[in-house]
Image (cartoon, rainbow, N blue to C red; front, side, top):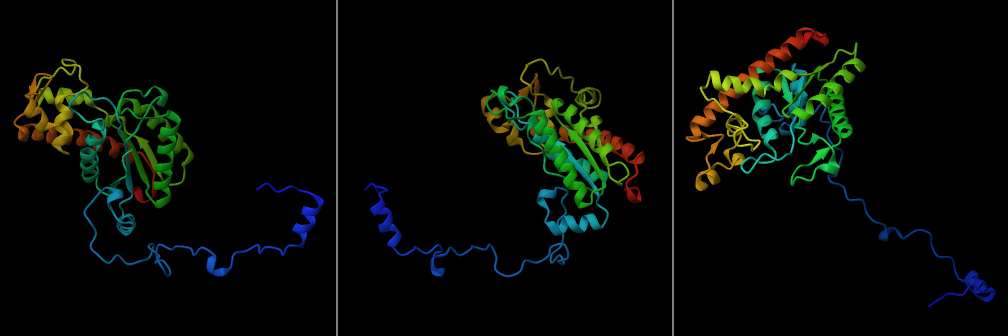
Length: 297
């Protein structure tokens, strides 16, 4: 029904009783609270259980991180990987799987170190990320994420922050953010640095040949997949290299090198992890020796 705004209609409306502007109390929505009562202050709440032996911040409780910081665990790693095309056998998260084992190894060898959540998306042009699964951040977004993560770690009390990238396209943005924040934080007792020595796949290939006795030409099959990468990832989970499916299909080789027996390949990967860890930790300690966070941490 259409209401016509005539003089008579206006007078009729004016004579109607005014509608209440507020709903009666019983009809008002009641706020839903996640928990009733006053929340405990986790900054001072005593930890009621034993702490987990874990270096990954996302797998620790807030109280565990708090207590580790208080006891001198004030170094943090920011790791960047990526989602990209890696041939028919490796998952798109190849670099992220590598970082799961490398981050663990480096943090434990370095000591007093925790690992931030992995930055799993690499920089690039999102409009050109047409390869199925190839998600990209713009360079600006990538750098903003790194900047905000590092600043968050600084605010919590970490005094050394190191950026390590497992993909080549990540290096420029990581170096730029580290340089920017290092200058901005000068005199505040917090050190930050990019560690390019971690991205050492050329040296890994030489180590694999000279020490492990496996001479590989990564260009042979052109699959963006290598024995050394596969062996490292198998230390995380063989499913990420589709081990059983490759065995079933008779495809358990890469660049002419068999990945069977699996135990041998995993052992090769473990030794490559140790090699990369040693190189990276040495580079980090050199940066720490030349910096000036409080208490020499």
